[in-house]
Image 1 (cartoon, rainbow, N blue to C red):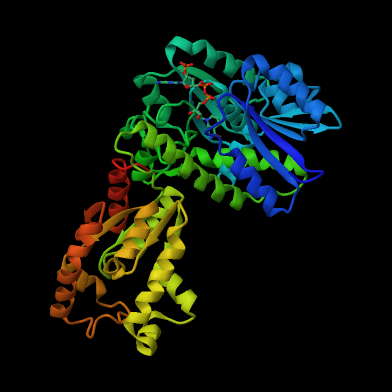
Image 2: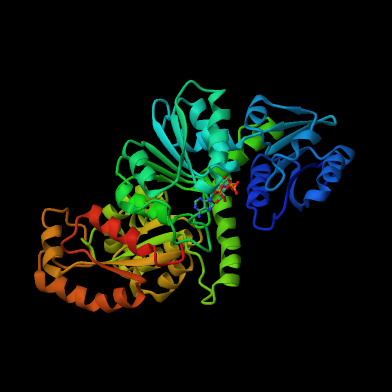
Length: 472
Ligand code: NAP
């Protein structure tokens, strides 16, 4: 540890799966700060000693997580207005021995919405669950002008009613609490603009569950799931399938961390880096979790790679999928052109197909190390096994199967820039190339979508539905 280094710590129990150390240490590094972030498992009986130790050894900042967010309050010297109103603290700043508590969960939730240009003002929100996370979310929603219905299981309805009553002190917007049962859910969702799942339903290992039947979701809804393990819950998959806008729990996690970073350092947080590192760390830690609990030792994959013949719709489907899942879009052929500084037909004519395939191998290597992407691959990517092996490290491979007649009709009227074909209008040549490549596509695909008679939107929906059966 370097001299004069500032220490930030996470107090919670458990903390082993926390993504915060990776996220904050990457942010400190990016800003050139001499800070370090460590996760400390603090049992409830040791919380007081840990807080006193923070003062004694001059720990600069704290994150507080379950189960200490409420019990830490009497141990602090000051609270900001938000943490006072919410009654929970997740961030502490130590200024010369004075410990001040903050709550960045609520603002983190709001930032996750506004980052996607969603303004809750005037909207009707339904929030499932009435625990700690729900409190922060409901507070954020009423403070930004939404009206809120909190739904909780009947056995604990008084939690929801207490929450609604408390929020009523901060807002003139309607806030109701109601029992979470099929009739109420149907009625409340009829007019909802925003649906938030603030329960643990959908979380690993019970990841194939959702509290909301598909038929109650609508394409114009915004659906936010606070669960981030897995990144794509059943609720989000169902909502995306219908064309609704979806936001996963990692967004709130990243933003609450970014706002804590700002409080400790006074600097603008490098949110993009924090998100990227959190996704990668999630993938690694998620893999450990999964392999311990699933006998098949499946690795969690967060990317989708689309393969198929030219004209099969990979680029359009990839764009739609990236929009629906919030994953980064990568067009492999475009990346090759950028790296080569010229177009693909120019590469073929000046350097030949072998040189193109080498550039393709390099481009696949470049993209396959990152997570959470939708990768639209060139038609011949499957010809080199090393490409598939690299893609499969992080991605579920999806083959868009399209019949030769349909390929011909889709290619008609498109610009002729298909250098692997001598004559793109020659049906026999197209058919021959398809029959040569098809065994490669089928052998390497995790999912095959017969999309000859589907629109790009329908194809994307089918992919999202089929991904449900994979560890994502
Ligand atoms: P919590 O205080 O334990 O509250 C859990 C809530 O979920 C309670 O209202 C509980 O209802 C409800 N619930 C649990 N199982 C249910 C079921 N089968 N059916 C209906 N309701 C059920 O937990 P929390 O801290 O609020 O966390 C809730 C979720 O949010 C967790 O998945 C957590 O990982 C996630 N979270 C995410 C972030 C983020 O940054 N993305 C931050 C905080 C939390 P009862 O009262 O009836 O038990």
